[in-house]
Image (cartoon, rainbow, N blue to C red):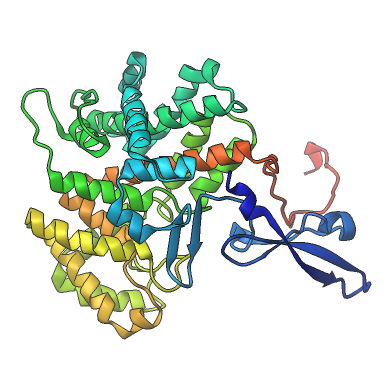
Length: 438
């Protein structure tokens, strides 16, 4: 649909000249709606016998996409062209889900139909629920989430033609509907409680909270504060361009793998502490600091280049100025703490750490502001989520972005199987010596 806008070929060309031979090559330049131009380097090997080298792919464009755009210098985040600030204030997570999947915000009729279909798919297959009994009682919920989502490949393999748009859409809705159910079941297993089935009279976030915290023996009252805060956090985490987990999903999808397996690969990548595990690392850091009285001591440690201690949840690889999501979530964080009136020494410590960092010249000059992971971890703790569920909550939200990018990749006529190259630095060719002479 709008993908073609991101594939505009510029009239400009980029000329590279090989110094030793004087041989030149003109490379086409591709322009998008926003962002820097990109040089197409696909002909470099054919013409000059060389590859490009970019560890971490920090300056490499792997695809064209119409889903999300980030300007890290200006602190801009757009979903399908809409600023995240407007979406967070005016829309629900289900509206954002529709937007990311289909490119436009839904009408009331479209939203009602979409939400009803999502509710229709919330239940897990009965036999899938038994999978959790095979996990150790103290297994990390992310390990269970990864395994069970991957196992969905065995349940729907005969109903998934990735080249069929209708099948792709059914997968998208089924995956988005079932991920909270699976996540809640993983939590229930970890605390040795019975799995609570979905209640389709509730909205997306209310249903998840009920499956997570309700028990058969007593009535559970869903907190409107918790539901509203969770909806906002899901919006802010729904997509973030070509991050490590999204790129993993697209790379897996490029091989034509079953899409549930591709999402499981994204979950395993998100689990890394440098990615989705960052908000869990924030709480672990706060526990290491221990109390607000030691705040100044650990800020000094963070500024000491010879000390390995680092403040988790400060700064961002992409945002060089400020994270627009952090601006939104900071306000929500303070509102949630005030409304809930939670008395927790770690939350008091977090607020003091935030205040100190925002005033400290070192952090201000380096623009190491608290990011979305810092605040999301604080909110999750205030709402009663255990630390090992933080990344699971991230995965529920990011499933929307993964599914949207997977579907876009399958529909892209330029897509081909991902196959990065390497700079080989191993041994040169050598002969095998007989084992008796080694």
